[in-house]
Image (tube, rainbow, N blue to C red; front, side):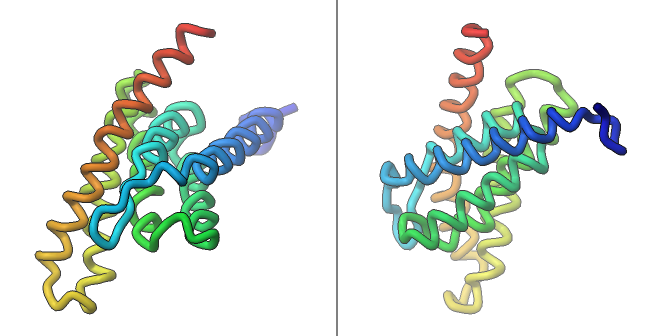
Length: 165
């Protein structure tokens, strides 16, 4: 059965279930966060974003990342910086995969997280720091420390999943 958008309804159900599983996995793995200054770097979230962006597409992956950020923040295992950081990395991977159609799109996760997420985060926190440039450098560095290894891990996970069928 097809929906009005040409996709099968089973495909939407599959995406919803996978998005929920990725969000749950992100919350479960949140104990592996590493504190860096005022933020916590969480490479496993970026790995999940990389896999979700390839398997689910940009919007489902970004939604899953946003649900994860909300749950982690409400449970006290995440910081406010997950909101501008995480969804944009997943979105970048999903968009890159639409263009490339290759698993290497997972390596685009830092593009969204560092360039878009850190910039947005710096704009939001700069009134509290007094300097937008200092906040931007700090956030770009901490987001890069988390998202680059996470993207590599996610790419590796995708390769293992492809080999296993």
